[in-house]
Length: 342
Ligand SMILES: [Cu+2]
Image 1: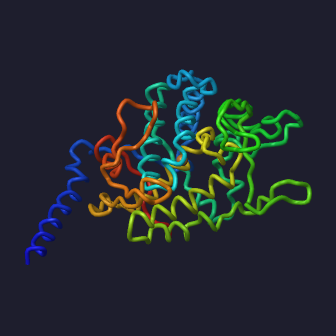
Image 2: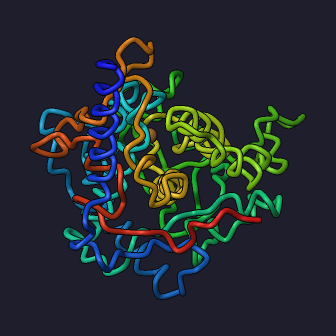
């Protein structure tokens, strides 16, 4: 009896903790709406691109000792790169990237006068159409430009570059390493993509693009992600399959841990965040469900009170529980569509 009443009290306490997280909502009555890229009108698209280009043109404010860190975006790229194994394939993958996308949006606003809201790229739309290579996200005028092209140069790092769109022919200083893509250091290179279908190369040594692995990130996969009962299982599939494959099929700067070099990183991760928020719903239990491990070796259990590493990007480490709910605490946004496709 004693243990049962103890359990009952514990359950009550857990219930109270769970319902405390989606707080009274008094301070998030009018959440910003993150829209899918295709839902933006041309002026909204142009404004996002303007601000994203602007942030990449500002000088760094952090990492004074790191010569390879030169731009304001490098502050973010270097942080993500250095923390690689602390924020991927561990429990904090989703809250850390939720924090990171919000930080980027805040910087667009405070440092580049951005007047819009962070958009997302719903790649399942392109996957269902089996037409990812021609997604409007890659439009040279109203999008982010397309695949990298051979330049004819023999200089390492400048042989294949994105040559169209607003980020064409920009130089980046953080790791796109040769031979190891994840080596640190000053590796000047052009912004690059290398579309592929994970199918190797053709007879001319060119990547086979195919449908760019549409079956790894179509709506069927997203429904499977959404069907898990626990945070850990949902997060594992979301990160390991659709999230990872989008990085792999675009490749170039999207491939290695310096992937915030790719402007689509933030639209991609907004969509990953949307999948988590959709799974959470406004359900108190799921808004408090945070399980898994702090380390990739799976020896240190994760807790919702864990802090998240951010190196020099802030004075205080964010706490996971403050990033569980997109309409609570430091966050106040929603997504234009939270429905699962039919
Ligand atoms: Cu990441």
